[in-house]
Amino acid sequence: MAAADDTPEPGPEVEMTLGDHLDELRKRLFRGVIVLFVCIGALWAYRDTCYAIIMAPFQEASALLREDWLEELEERLAEDPSLPRTTFFMTADPEDQRLVPRYEIDDRPLVTGWQEGFIIKLRVCLYFALFIGGPYFLWQLWGFIAAGLYKSERRVIGLYFPASVVLFFTGILFGYFKMVPIGLYFLSSEMRPEQINASFSLDKYFTLFSGLCLALGVVFQLPVLMVGLYQLGLIEAKSYALYRGHFAFAATLIAAILTPPDPITLGLLALPMVVLYEVGILIVRFLDRKRARAPGEVVA
Image (tube, rainbow, N blue to C red; front, top):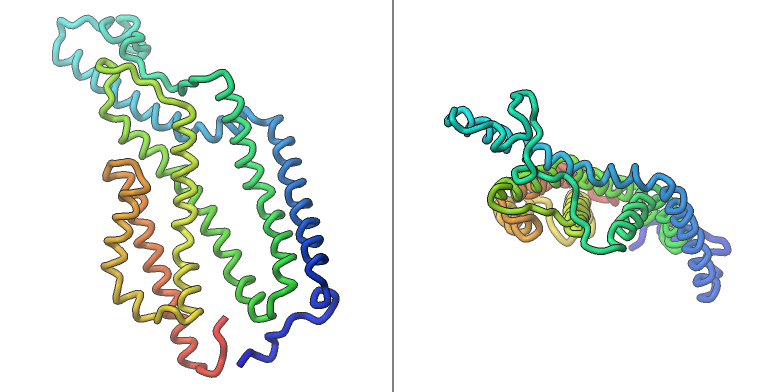
């Protein structure tokens, strides 16, 4: 039996026809899209700054690779004193760290088409616009959806949706600051400049960057998903702890599919998944104890 407050709010929302609902949805979507376009237009004036922010993990990985490469070349010179320093460096000055072109690691990505740079910067502005204007867009959708929900349903969404948004952006930031630069570094560490002419594609970097960050944003929703399944009665609280080992195996498998083929990036994705699973277990146990103390109440 529904709770006492499980009735739609009285008022014009309940009396609206299907056409009225569609018109309301159209208006709200239009407002949200307009805000996104305004954000894109404003951000285009700062496209170079936005681009520099997106490229920071790439620059960090390149700097780490160059540092390792310089250290190896210095070791070679120390092992063979007869080898001229100018074999690897531009001058014989020990303080001069400029490498000859053959041994240099280029920290500028490769563009293979005339339009690629323009499209990438446009996509960068779009993603920043979603980051800034997305909350308003979601607020407009929420205003449309909430009119047809029960009070208890609105209360539950009001409790868990902010946590979901925070976890999503936390996952993106984790990918930006840790996953992408470390993953690029270890993936490229075996590409020695004296053996190959390494050219990193801007489009492929951006695809890897956006894919990993988005995957982590989704993965960080795990505690919210676990609580939701428990609240719906689909999974008991004790089942989460019972299948802890199974989840650890599944997390490793998922990480192996989503990440580049190296153990470091695999661990960087699998470990947070396991930690988030444990956080979800703690939250569900708390809710289960709360429900046990008040069996007649609906736990929100």
